[in-house]
Length: 320
Image (cartoon, rainbow, N blue to C red; front, top):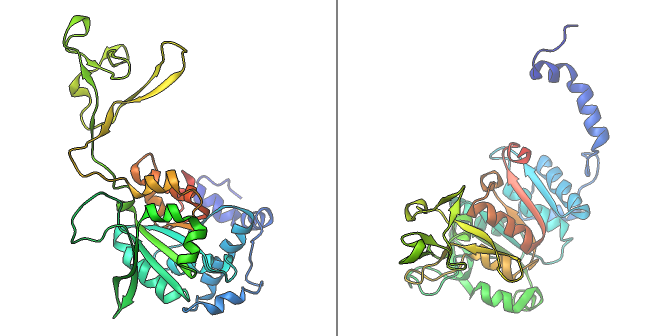
């Protein structure tokens, strides 16, 4: 037999043996021969057998680990799978979950949640700000399904109130299962910012950009920065304190008080609501990778919930 010259030829020739080794090394947590949970029958929409396998697999995974991923092509019913796996893992008890989804899927998530989970209350995290357009919804609002449309109707609260109540206090206000849905664009929507630096007006630093914490010129690669070097970036310095030699993170930007004063919901939850939710689900998680505001929001989900899952239709993200 000729030696395979490409990866495709190697996989085609050894696929059977590779499959056997994978199954031997990573046996399925729930196989097709295992009976599914009786809780599957309590869902308002009956999952297909393949969806049931995914639901049970993640529910079993959550028993031994904190995180999981659901990788399936578009149209495979990842929303139904995510709702079902939270319901099964909760073992019939009321739970709280938060879902971060792309903007165009927020109402779809709300609609499918109402149509899938029994005795559930759905809430939209619209924003967290001071002031704003009074005609637009703000805070955290309960939504219901009316004539096939999602309408904001019911309880109105805010993230600050949820933080004050805590999970136990929230259970007294909402004893039913509660699902909070947050658009990923709104999750990162915080305050406006501006550069923060001084400018030398005399002496040897005349005309140079100075760090407000050290009153020294800002340099990189033995060159002093100019105002034009800042552009739309948010630079920072890590400097040494003079007296005790400890390091200091010195941001060269600050919030702009002359514009809308608000805090990003993701930032607030990450700081003040650790493990507030029982479950967190990130939809289209492959779009949240990297050191970006949306990527940081994904990190927040891992902090605010006890169990976390990502939904994606590509395995490329898992390989990063």
